[in-house]
Length: 344
Ligand SMILES: Cc1cc2nc3c(=O)[nH]c(=O)nc-3n(C[C@H](O)[C@H](O)[C@H](O)COP(=O)(O)OP(=O)(O)OC[C@H]3O[C@@H](n4cnc5c(N)ncnc54)[C@H](O)[C@@H]3O)c2cc1C
Ligand code: FES
Image (cartoon, rainbow, N blue to C red; front, side, top):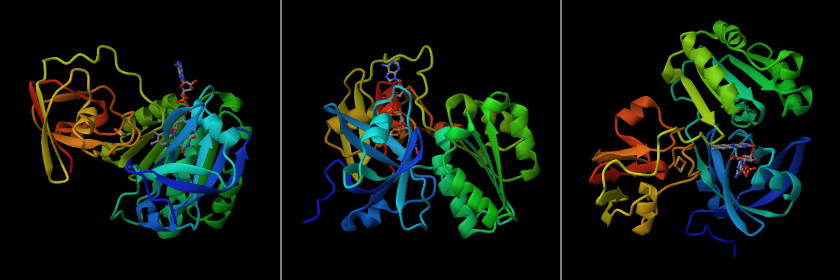
C-alpha cells in the first residue's frame, strides 16, 4: 500500500531521474505518489519544502520547481551552496530510486491573475535564482502572448544553468522572448545602470527578481529608482536575512497570553518567554501552517487582531500587509501583554 503523507504533511517522492546541469547544480525529477497528486499541484514560481536526514540530522530546505505546471515532470534544481549541508548532499548523494520527503508546494512568487497580454514579464535571475524564473518564463510563454524579457547573471559561462533550454526557448519564441546573459568574469557584477537599461524598454510590466542577496538588492533598488511600482515588483529571497541589529529575543513587554484562531478552533495559551507565535501554536497542539521557518516563504502568515508582535526576519510580507497586521508567525515575538492572532 502506498505510504500516506505523514502527520506533519510530508509525502515520499521518488527520484525518477537525476540530471547534472552544471558541475555545481543538479535537477531532480520527482514522482509524486498517486494519492498525493492533488496536493502537489503547483503554480509556476512555487517551491517544495524538502526534508532530508544528513549525518543523523533532520533538515528542511526549500527548493523551487524549475519545471512548469504544464510539463509532465515535476522537477527541482539545486545548486551547491559552498559549505552548505543539504545542497551539497543532494548534489553528491541523491540517486535515482531514492525517496525524498517533501511538503506540498507553497509560495507567492507567482504570476498575477488577470494580467493583460501587452504587459511584459521582466525577470532578473542570478545563479540558482533561475529555478523559479525558468518556471515562470516557460508558463508565460506557453499560456499567454505576453512579451518576456530575461536578464540572467552568473559568475562565468560555466555556471549557467539551463543554457541549452533557454537558447531553445529563445529560438522558438524569437518574436517575444529576449534573453540577456551577464557574466561577472567579463567586467564585474551587475550594476544599477545595466538593470535600468534592460528594464526600460519593457515599461509597465511585472518584474520578478531572484538570486543572491547583493544581486537582489541592486536590482530591487534600480527598478524602484527607475519608477517600477512596488506592487509590480516580485521578489523571492533564497537566503536568510541577517537579524537586523537591535532585534533581540527579548519582548518589549512581558506577554502573558496568546490567543490563536486556526481552522475554526480558538485556543488561549500562557505565553512562554522567547517562543515564537508558531511555537506557541504548536505547543497547544495546533497544526499551524509552516514551511521554511526562516521568514522567507509566507506560509505561516496570520493576522494580529489584538495586541502586537514583531518579526525577527521578514522576507515574505510587503509593507502594506505588515500595516494590515499580517505577521510571519515563525518569526514573531509578542510585544504586548496579550496577543490574538488569526490564521486565514
Ligand atoms: C523559498 C525558497 C526557495 C528556494 N529555492 C531554491 C532552489 O530552487 N534552488 C536552490 O539551489 N536553492 C534554493 N533555495 C535555497 C535553499 O533552500 C537552501 O537555503 C540552500 O540550498 C542552502 O542550503 P544548505 O543546506 O546547502 O546550506 P546550509 O547548511 O543551510 O548553509 C547555508 C550557508 O550558510 C553557511 N553556514 C552554515 N552554517 C554556518 C555557521 N555556523 N557559520 C557560518 N556560516 C554558516 C554555509 O557555509 C552556507 O554558505 C530556496 C530557498 C527558499 C527560502
Ligand atoms: S514558515 Fe516560511 S516564513 Fe514562516
